[in-house]
Length: 283
Image 1 (spheres, helix red, strand yellow):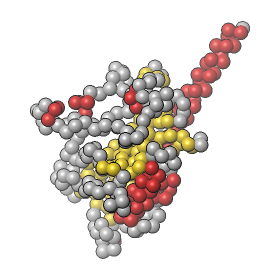
Image 2 (cartoon, helix red, strand yellow):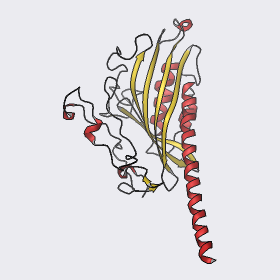
Image 3 (cartoon, rainbow, N blue to C red):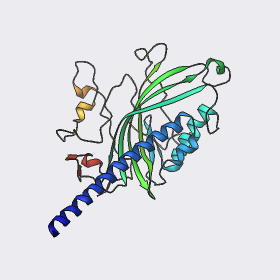
Image 4 (tube, helix red, strand yellow):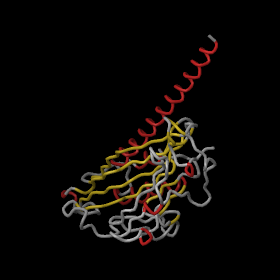
């Protein structure tokens, strides 16, 4: 009887952990979706409030990083808010910026305080012809496809955005499609803060825009083999050329001064490794 009771307690404990993991994964997924809904309507104050207060918080975007909560504010309340809606919090008539978030893969570590998410975004953006004389973008419409490889942390019991890496993968003008998109469709930042009052804190060698088709690294290993994709296989050389001739592979490396105390550790769930050992945050 005692053995059966002990076995039952162990099963209950395992089930409790599994329910907690599934619940956390669902919460992280909702956090990202809620972020997307705020972003759609230029509610940048609400977007910033979703970011963690942790000093290691950052956004990586267009070959640059905005570090800490102040850097996050500079990107959303500065660059985006000033460019798209002239400083107001919320939409302006005739400006479209919808982000469809999909194909999400969420993994939460055993501590229930750190998570990873890979997700795709498809954006439809532009202005209505009725505001072509009043909006600084004039009359435009375009598509954008991008990929997130993000990290989240739980602060005071609440899941928050932590390390956000967004790679705008391709752009296309609505009339012409993506095959005629000009290279470097979006200008890369060239100056950092404070030389540029709305600029990033650092510029990094992670520049990728269509027709560049390098692979954004996966936070997880292969679900069957348990292996990491080879670095050369993340490159995108010209057709028929050796991988070494292509641009260097992209990385999920941390900025200088940040580290992962759990790097090198492994943990499994449902019989498989969930996150690559070098990306494990907590020991």
